[in-house]
Length: 426
Image (cartoon, rainbow, N blue to C red):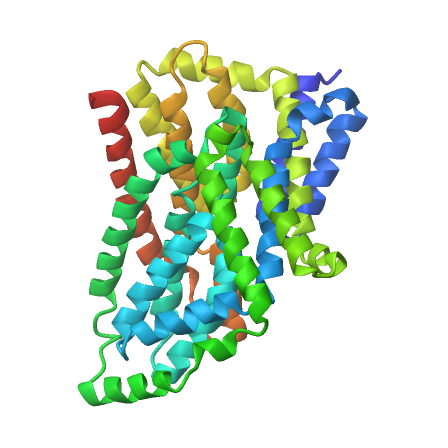
């Protein structure tokens, strides 16, 4: 007779394989996997609330409502046009400025939402400048993944890690933001060297581009001034509450829901329209995946793996390097969300024999930055390249891999250096 441990492992492997295959929507795959382990009583019905991380789910829902409500005001188009004007006709300056805006925005909004808003504007700016948009788009991808890694709310793996480990917004700022700031500066320097010839224009061409952008009126991009002002106020309030949520005694998910409630009430937007735009498939994917991984916890599989790792890892420094680099290379191949969901209980299982606090930052580092390695490594990559393809610009797997793997190696090396200094040397 097949034991529950083997069934849990088989369901996990098959679910993972189908997610990678992508012929069936990943949300459907996760829901079917969850249904199987519950139907076979591997995960008891009453234990489902224990494994579904509602902190992650509600934080995502709250931020999705805020972004979808604010989008109707023209706020994000305003920011894009304002940024293009600051470039003063220089394609290289456009690449650098839009990358900084993307990185900063991705730190406080979901990075997929950020690239959905910025990619069309980058394509428009490139068409006005009459330059190849590919360097802009590749820089945007790297900036979104690096910026998203800097905060608790910037990337789904961080949301999951923060909720599971009870980490605060400010702890992410202290531990992740400095290394991501350095990483963004280094990567932009690398891209400036790589694309310096492609983005070079003559002084006359630069003057012409600058005159064209001068004719754009960023204020005309604002479709609803009252909603614009309300959105700015609420987003600023939510960011401020994220910084102080531990002092206020509020969970990050509650902060996001409070902000969403205020903006919906104040803006008088039809909730039906806003709720329809929530990424429900992503939320059901999270929920199903939590239950599938919960089956590995329930049957003791995760605990056994943790015991094996602990027996073969002799220091926290070794554990930091193993988790960061394993997560990075694995995230370049598979989606970082199921990978993070799998490694979270593994790290929790190691807490009996070592201080796992540094390991949460190693997981965040690897899971978020590993996505830069390949075109399928992160959701933001897939979204940007999909929009580019619909507009006639194709980036091949190999073309992206050449730069992406270099960025992965450099950024993860810088990050592990930071963690080693913070938690091993000092």
